[in-house]
Image (tube, rainbow, N blue to C red; front, side):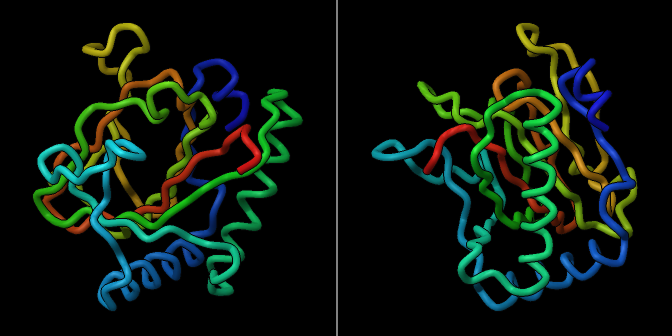
Length: 196
């Protein structure tokens, strides 16, 4: 996976997380959503932070290490190991990560964007773990990655299948979540090089 990241600045793998572990994360994600723990996702930050369902239609729940369940703690432990491997392989100076569950209801997507807020470059590597066991092609919800500096040129589309894990450079790739026609579950986040 890291070799691919080194050559293409993005990579995906189905071998990093066991399927049963991903199933349990999916069940926890769905249960927490059903309990009303999720919030409508926003765009922007600070004074410009707002929600626009026509641009971004998902609901999110941030995972806090202080309140994380044992299952979530296990996932956070995997992320810490990945952070260390990324630093050893790419000398990125990563200091922390942030992550959340995301659920896109049917009809929702996320328009093309870059993962760093304007004026900030702290997010270095975006990661996504997909949690959808019976996803089929007609369900939509693909991650579309576009060519840096040529954002109309599609590089790849990745289906959000259970256990697929994606890494890509946060500062390089315009990307979007295609409209989903089934509930679409994932854990998304960023490895960062700032301290807090």
